[in-house]
Image: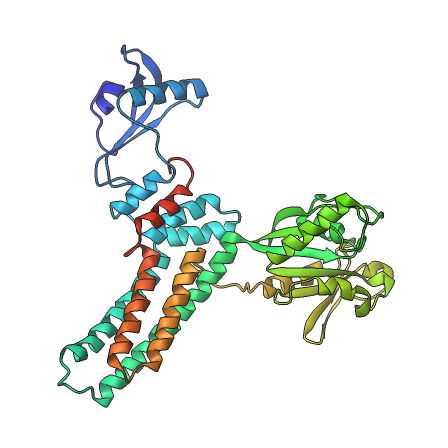
Length: 415
């Protein structure tokens, strides 16, 4: 194809300025052609890269000519899938390509690059190597039952297992932080009408994304806003005020509020400090909140009440005093918000997905169970094997074809 399309033989890995020829030999465009010979390419296969002018008409004509010569459009994720199948990268690295494309913050992009470069896979493979060493030690005793395990070997197994548990726990923490960077946390604003939810949303977003009015019930539907707090992506949802109403449209908004609450990672309960309300005054609102979801109580409008910005603990719950209008106390809110969702600054964060966290949790549970079976070599060995299989699923050592298809189908077209 390359010779037919360009009219010349291309030197591998050398940029060549050349015409892109139509079937009758006339130039469709002039541009740069790069030929990569296998296995020295992204996919590990022969690849021809064409760089032409950006007009849609000329690009379509060159693309049509390539398809005449036998090419076809790439399926979503196909290039990276081929790279994985040709052992140019493992599954965790392949997924990080999509994570890098989808990164919404600079910190998320840096973490995705680290995973793409293999840091996450290296950490996993290191644990797997230690697991294999421990399994060899244990299974050797099963192959030679006449040789009793002495106290030294028993202690060695226990010591190696402790190291493995510590390392898996460390990786899980870094992966969980990476999951927050990748997915973002769901933060839901709730409260009575006209307490300042929309004002707080605008303050955190840094722009006027919600209508602010003195009329109760102005927000009749959930308003969603993606934003960053110190490099961490958050999805802030400003909900319709929770109250009894005869307005059918407002009822629909309140119903959506209830739905948003079920998906929240943290709930911000906004209170009007200028009205000096007690907890019993908003008990009806609290009763509608899911009990297991963390919540922060925000006492707004201290610019009217005269209360100073502060943080108080009451019955194990955090109460913050702030002003959405003036911005006083917003920095403290951001700090407490990140703390509540479990974020803390760490070096070496791995961009992780839900399946990675599930696999790490599974491996950790098997290792914990193995620690209980130290005196039963058969059961001990079985738990170690299960832990290794869980970790192998992260890098794709043992992965079902249907899982591969699901992963790569989520990529953008081609890449």
